[in-house]
Length: 473
Image 1 (cartoon, helix red, strand yellow):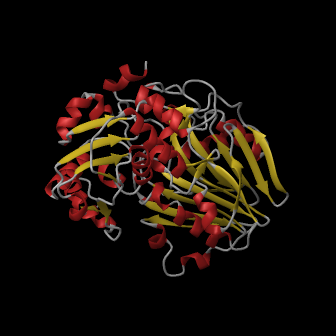
Image 2: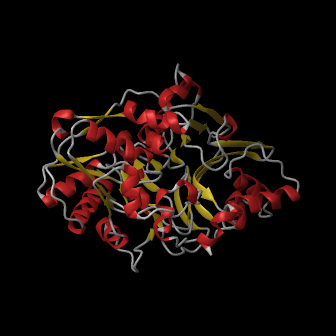
Image 3: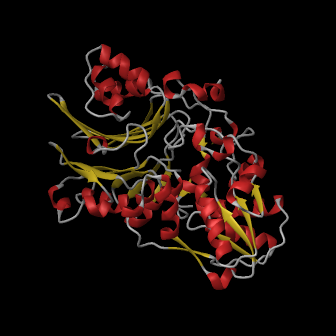
């Protein structure tokens, strides 16, 4: 669905390359492929072996790097980042990669995820004299590295990473090496690739496709990769914990042409639609999906039920960010700017509307209304994931249960609120089975916290609001 209108957003995307003289330009294309993961800020830091240089700013990738700004970034190693502000909020000071300079060398850090013990660590560091220049939880890592007593940077980084709790996929760079690390649960996706003799890393494999790189493998939970002019060295900063990749990466966040742990996102979403078709019986004339992330599931639903799939909703791809407004009233109006029903497809028809999730319910209600105004006689809403009942503390901006319509309403109450003729959510078991991960156990290597309330890590008291504490005990 339209993430910017409904309030379900991933924090960011990271990209890194080492060993190519056009590192900055390649990072630029990689960030373009990851633009869906964050539209509020972008940045690239490069190294030429002697110093780190940065260009970053608020806005989209092509806005930040306009008018030849890439020409100033010369080097063979680069770290890039696109940001959606969750932890720490917005502001240019929070745009990544964060760049730190000292007498012993410089450090750039790009981070995807959210640290649940960030406030606890910040208080500890401030008591020791640290002064934070941003409100981003990412800065915590830089201070921990600087204060570590180990002699080498690699040992200091490992020690600092071992103190972090929550979701983190880090790409760090000094003048002479790149460090890549994924949290012990593997909550956020991170992949390793090869472009000629250069090594590349990215939040999603779609970034490799755009630059012509080959996918090597996923970065494993707890891994610590050192990439420099001698090549790649694989170490660990922590033993892998219970695997818990964010399920919403498969359901919604990642691009359909990306793979996570060898599972193609489009294929997984088609299976979600097929599984959903097995769990619901609906008499209808046409199936349509809410662009873009629900199209694959709608195709799978159609193939299984035999109900024809049609483009009943069209997304306007030329509405600028001017229309992404913070107020609820303007957010509701923005749905009409972003989506239009195809009257000739839905008029006089019983429509199955497939979507990936319902968060607040506002956008679902507006789309159902639009379809009925366009002449649909019935609108049956089917969702290719279970109800989102619990807040996320790992980098998705649903940190309050009060935002979630399913946290305080039954399915029937949600149906009435959005005005649908029927409403069906996919079961947790059906979702896990459809995605097809081979990890052992009922959760099959997924984080299902937003659906079940079972959080894979400890949640610190200062991370949550008082009324949410019962959710995570």
